[in-house]
Image 1 (tube, rainbow, N blue to C red):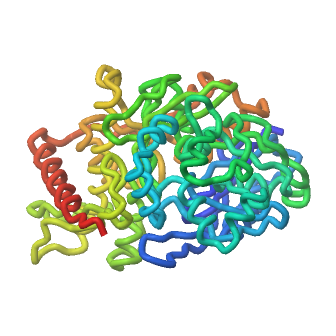
Image 2 (image 1 turned 90 degrees about the vertical axis):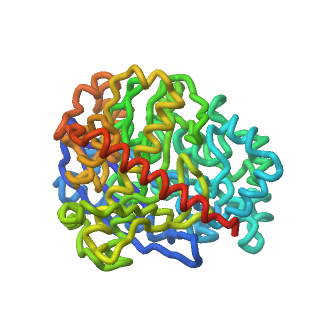
Image 3 (image 1 turned 120 degrees about the vertical axis):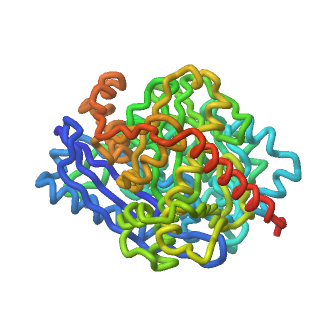
Length: 500
């Protein structure tokens, strides 16, 4: 049994990848599923769509690999993190659509928690800030807006889980209600210092303890899939939220190592070791992974819009047909124009954390066209990464002396233009690995580690291979001018906040 099946359940698609014992890919499958936008700033998924698409891609990948359940040592799960599902313990029916991490509907709940002076205790225990991004207030919203839900939850009839937890419950036929420490650390309900759900936090946010899953190591025996799903029972022995899984897949096991993943959003994590670092720059302190009962921590910066800026060019403006067109198009832009896109389509993430502001374009001229907009969209991702980079270096002075290299992964890293511009603006090397499927690889590694297929972390790190290093090649004067322009654009967007 030298194969591992990784489930990568993302925001816009579900994917399954079969990895061999040498971490090469035997097969993969992917399926998009519908997105629902019932109101401005609201984003939902149908839990049944998440489930059926996941099972479908797993079956496809197993078939394409030419193997059967008996050849698979373990299943690893990685997932869109803060997305929230509440379902009936008896029937398995969700009581509401899943509320997606991007959703901003709980801004008022968050504002009230802040006004009531709750942020210091929540931040101290969770490492997070109060924001609609996280799961806790989403659970409270469902309990308060679905008729009878709060009373049913109080009677122990409802369960809450992030997507990994929901999939685990379905995969095991309703036998296992568990999650791992990385996903738990994104809920506003979990104390990252004690490694447990916190009664004070549960009371503040209004979530009954009976709804919550058991929290385990990221690499642990969670249960096994029911035989009917894949033609035989398979052990499920690895779970991590997508950004933590990518950190593991990028082999960022040493303090000071940093990765940035470019998917729908962009997420940068800096490994800070066994000590949680308190951010002074509105970054998050989070659990990077938990192995053998020991937690390793990270500083994280979250950008809500990265790849979705390219989707906007394609679907919203219609100026490209395929994402791959943006780099060549940006290359044709007028160098005399300085167009800035601040893509605050759903508010701004780190280090600004303002859910109310909306996006804006600056520097438009009569000659601004598709090439300049493509340039601005790709560059916006690089500028936002710079903001995270600068905040991390300020929060963790040790990184100043480390020879910092950024390891990158995710769909946008296929664009050489974007990665070169990222290196230029960071004034640091950007490393793109041979295996781009780092999120799925991280999940596979956690499962394979528990199943005895993969070695301990330092040995696993030896397998990391560089595909291309992008070195900075921009003059300091140009770089400083461009960064100053970005800072003015961000200031303009933040100034537009009328608190509505």
